[in-house]
Length: 271
Length: 152
Image 1 (cartoon, each protein chain N blue to C red):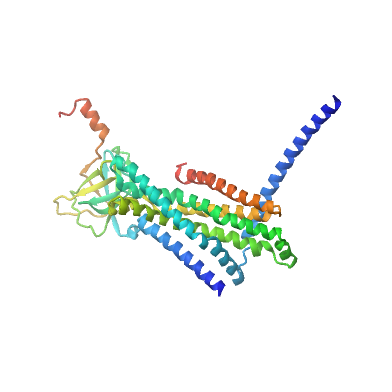
Image 2 (cartoon, chains in turn green, orange):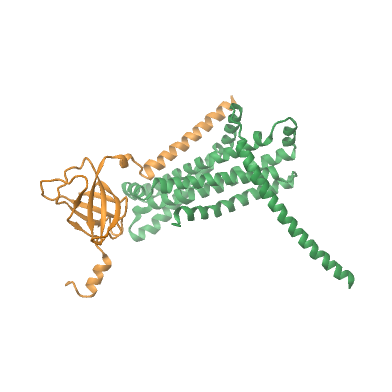
């Protein structure tokens, strides 16, 4: 009787202790990631050497993502054109398909889908690369040599993601609009003049395009922050790298989707 | 050599991005230098705007000759006061010009359609158009039919 009672007491204490530890761990990792972001953003070496590191990373993160962005943008634009046409033809206003495709892409799908693809294509690679550097102790040997890995390794990657994301999102939207035009004008026979003029009268530069661009900038910062921090902060084992890569994709997707709702509510919600 | 080709690729990438932004600005949002085009202001009072808003089109014979720059309520006459910016090269609108609010298509945007009268004098900056026709209000029209005020 005594021993059962004691065992129960221990398990309750253990549960409380574990909850407390999880909470502390979580807070400390949030704090660490914030400090990490500040140091990495301010740590970009602006020398010629640093800029060439940045160029290499923009090449890896941005230029090599171009193909997936262009192909998916084209197909998403084509699907939007097809679906929009099928719905709008019922109301006899199929000319409005250009307006629908452009607004959907520029405001929402451009930034969001680009960020999701970016997290999957570039973010996971960043995490795995930095994680392997940590696991093979390249980061600590850099510190031994007096090179700050935050400046040398992390800052160029963070800045590269931050710079590439908006460019990729703009390219995605443009290619998508082109794809929508391909389907609705060239295939389904919507009058081309009405297609463009409807689009131009409803899309506003500062209201729609600049707001979409702001979204892309925010998503770029969040995605590359998560990717780089997960890589830098992981448990340096092969299993740890796997977990961190998964976390990067999951956390990036969730934060992009929830931030998108917040930003949309602020920008277009009329609050 | 490898570094150089990387830099070239990054440069091309950024140029493509800028070209895409220019495409979005000019072709998709129709951003032009029209807003800097010289214009003069003309006012008109309407009983009912029926959804006409700022940035709306002002057209003459179907050609855009200006835009609506402000919409406000005239407190004295309880009617809507519309401020229009007419392009300076359209400088021969007579003082008895009629301004009517019309709809593009069945459900499209509202715009102001001008039709020129026969007067010798022309509208100048700050003048008011007195002869106006308000927007066609479908609810009012149906209401008038339903209550039998209008003979069919």
